[in-house]
Length: 173
Picture 1 (cartoon, one colour):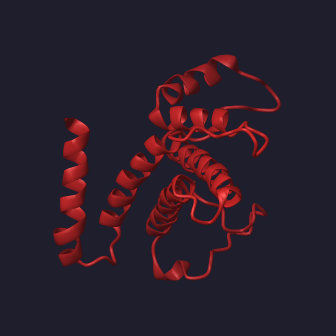
Picture 2 (cartoon, rainbow, N blue to C red; picture 1 turned 90 degrees about the horizontal axis):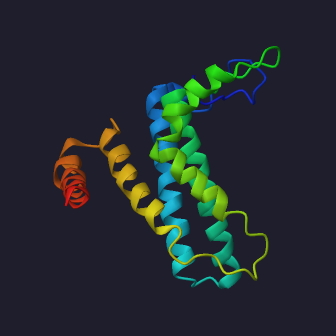
């Protein structure tokens, strides 16, 4: 389980630099990059300093990144749905889908998919549609940064942990 590095051909290849970090760290760094990209796309959309066309592209890219990260998290938690081409078992699919549909990751993916259905640039996107996902991405980015083994303990103690505690406290209030 995890990301395929061989282009789906089944060769078992590893990406360059994979011998420097364990697979869990590579996945954590990839998810960190995706969460930071969601934050960057949200800011580029809300502050259109590069023009409206680029702002709309960032909006769409942000929605696509939200779908991608949400589906990756759903895959990590629940695996693939039990679908077979030979025999369709609706009860097994229903049993798999019960916990999936109550997951917040499913909700974020569903909403982002519904919002990404806008086809033209002339249709105005919802201004704050990316905001909840960007806040969640910031929270997950802090969690991923805290779990990176190559980050010094001093940096974690002085920067990452206080920011995490502040965000966690704001969630609970």
